[in-house]
Image (cartoon, rainbow, N blue to C red; front, side, top):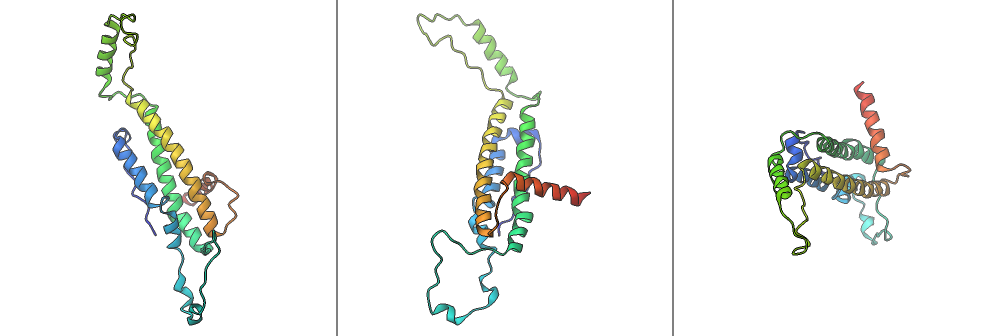
Amino acid sequence: MSKAYDRPSLTPQFCFNQTALRDFLRLSRATIDDSITQNLNSLLTPASAGFDPSSTSERQTLPPGTRRQIPASSCQYFKEKVLFPSWQMRSDVINYCASVATSPDPDDPDAILREVESARARERIVDERLDPYSGRYFPREVRTEMLANTMRNERSVESIIRSRTWSLVGERCGEEMGKSADEALDQWRRRQDARRV
C-alpha cells in the first residue's frame, strides 16, 4: 500500500514556485489517488484462508464489472490512515496558497518591470490607421493573479480526482456511499479534532 507523500513546508516562496507546487500535488495524487485500484488491491489478503487444492479444479471468474470485496476493517484503516490524511494535506496546501494569492505581495520581483512597461505604454504614440493592433497593451500578469488561477485549476482537478477515488472506494469496500467525498473528509476532520481535545 502506498504511503502518503510528505508534507511540504508552507511558505509563500513554495506557492510562487509553480514547479514545486505542481510537483507536490502531482506526486501526492499519483501516490494515492491515481493508483487507487492498486492501493485497494493491496488490502486484499488472498492467502489468509489458506490454500484449498479443490479451488484449482475449476476456473473461478467474476462477472464483468464486479470485483472482490475488501474487508471493512481494511477499508476503514485505509481511509483513516492513508486516504483522508493525503486529501487533507493537499487541501491545506491549496488553501494556504490560495490565501497567499489573495494577500498583498510586497516582494514581487516583477513590480518595477511592470511599472516601467506601463509607463512606456502610456508614452507610446499610436496611429491605429496604420496598425489597428498597435493600441493594444497587455500588462504583465501579477504573480499573485497567476497563483490564484493555478489554485482555481487545482481545486477543480482535486474535486474530480476525489470524486473518482471515492466512487472506487465505495465500490470496492461494498459500502453505500450516501455522502460525497468532501462530506466524508469533513466527518474525518471532525473526528480528528475531537481526538485532539
